[in-house]
Image (cartoon, rainbow, N blue to C red; front, top):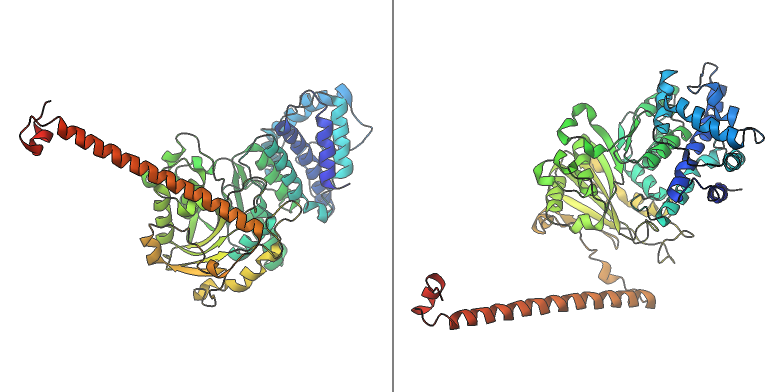
Length: 513
């Protein structure tokens, strides 16, 4: 049985339990169980590799000793054990062990809760996990992202919007282009489930890790922060799956809650790869942690200011941002001015619709920049759909192979991307033009006129969009005309009641009628 089928059957069992109310609780229930199973799988590997390994979890509470036996505890005995023994022990693990691993496990269970009321149904869920999940198999480790995407779809269906899964091709492409070196400190300030960090791990191991010491350097170079308990738990689990034995650098916190000036030189990093939440608003008071010119409650805007601040001189970043940031004005314009004058925004990859379906239909962009050198020109690359594809879907998702053309075109920042050439998808815009546009980065592809699409469906959609735009312009003209007529009528009326005054000048100053 596939992992997705296993997860679905587990959720079906949970639906029978009166204590679990809605998909959000079902997912929370499932995740802490998965963590203990996955942690136990990894411990088996660590025990084989090193005789000195000692688990931070007391033997009584290790998955293998209370859950693995399908004929083991069940009913009220199992329910009582979980509520009265297991959870208190893991939530206070620091009292019996002061190791970093113990603090990681405790951190996972600080916000966890056993919602299920039926011990028999708990046993059924545990048995499904035991039979269907073995993350010591490398292929199942890579299925973790797919599993999480399924969980997110359920949350989306439950009306809990705002948590997006970044498709793996996007994360992998961004990490490849930033190319974090072995000893470079990499951070994701809104790490979610750790997708960018796991791609970084794989990239460094593939290109730079040669010895055990290299692996130690790699493990110390990763930093992530996640605000929400569930994604943080999943990120911690994901790190363990990818061989990070003590993921203590994945913190459960809100990066934005710390005043910007409190991030000192020791906090600076070499690389940032991130998809900060967009479309959401931060709680009141968060914006006061930022300079007055950049105070806003728009989450993505605040994160971009923070990212620029956190980068070392010469540090590199790749960030996912929506179209609204590119053309936005006001505070957004000031943030873009800061970005282009303090950093080299050398590339903007414009993604097509559907990349983040089903979570959002908002068009997104990948911004690549280096801190410390002002921008002279910005290269734009409009990522096309593959041949025969009109939109991405569950059955036809984006693939990493689609970025092969961008990678071949990319060139090197060391020579100012001298090898880049304009084509039907790539063009450049100079800094003076962008300044004249008030830092509007929504620059359309100048070659698009050369590309004629005869697809009737596409043409119909374009026609409908144009009709909506025309109707909007017509309404605007009507409003302007009505306003002008109203002003003219007011002027005529004012003059008519002031005939008693000497001249029109006196009417505005002295007339009391």
